[in-house]
Image 1 (cartoon, helix red, strand yellow):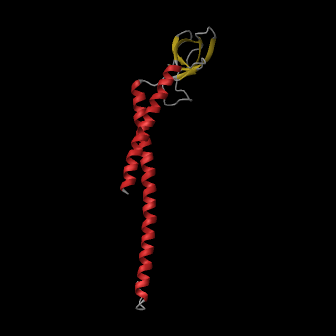
Image 2 (cartoon, one colour):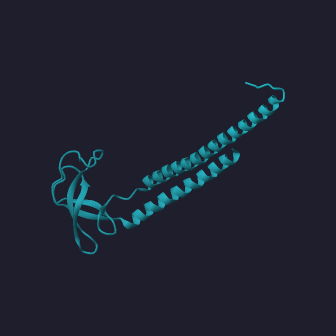
Length: 163
């Protein structure tokens, strides 16, 4: 059991650090691939709550922008309600010119890395400790079976049976 606890601790720390590093790396890739561009609102933004994102205060509206290569793109983006057509809004695009989510801020990246690291550490540690618990139960059962067999041999010499 001591070895299982040590392995759970070391494995959990390793898994947590590896997960946190991967989350930070993914956020850096997202920042490297995303570009902030100015887009013009093609239509008036509706007033009300968006049915596609009920927890967000922004609504979907059509925007148009020119990519760095000179091509004009049109797509939907989330904007503030009641924004009039012709207003300039900021959108984020990926390397292909498609609208994408704004990259995570430094604080959000840190929160995701810590949360992911803690969950990975707990998951690995939990799996190791559960496996050790199952192994201990099987070893205990084997020991009890051996003990019962020993009692059976001891009691049969006198012809008695215990329990």
